[in-house]
Image (cartoon, rainbow, N blue to C red):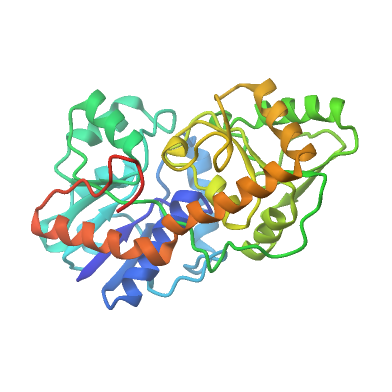
Length: 361
């Protein structure tokens, strides 16, 4: 098939990485895949001057994705309109602004598919975000929680479920694990819960003063306690080693569509303390393969971190079960399921490809 994947930008996010992973897999299966993004940036909440600044920065660069080895074609176009997109069999929208653009394409660009990560409230005008659910798309989601929430709230059908995946060739145990350290990913979006995480780590340091704390992310914090070491925009290899050498990983997010970092940590055999957000409950069970707390439960996070830091037996058990869990979500296992979902979209079929237990088929 000829498949066009329309992404809103090429910055590193978990969702963009997942889409590019699946694009590579489709390419390797023999499909003609083109990943497209616009030169003129989508507005989201940018002020016009910021939008213009981003445009000028893009104009001075060649189309590329520095942080990812994309094997299929990458195309940067002025706007997402018929004149600049290739003819194809399928064209995928991957966020609410791209859904509006793709909805305006004619049939020669392919049947229209909307990959819905989550309800993107807070990233633009709510009315325009909600309007995407009334557009004529075949919709695919990566989690039951997203499917159920959107179907119930907006009355539109999510036609297919495909597991989100972790590339176990990228994330695997790599390095000697320390006995007294915590890793946390940082982002300044309030939905990511960074302030909750920092508060929990501060409580933890009051109990275990010598614990080491590392954070990393693609956004620099405006200020962190002096005892937190921050790594800016680590490479995949560096992130893998951070997961692999940390005693425990903290995931304090308040809102997610899926929530891949806990699975990445599991793939590196690092036990996880995670908030119950997004699809976490679909792959993580408290005290079976992770310690799971409610979002914003700062004390619960601190308690879970302390328990894992002082209990090597529990760490070992969660680490082993985490590795077993990741086998169900490995990219090599689930890439074909994404292809099958696209084939069903091309044929106009609908199938909820998920066991009632929450585990992928």
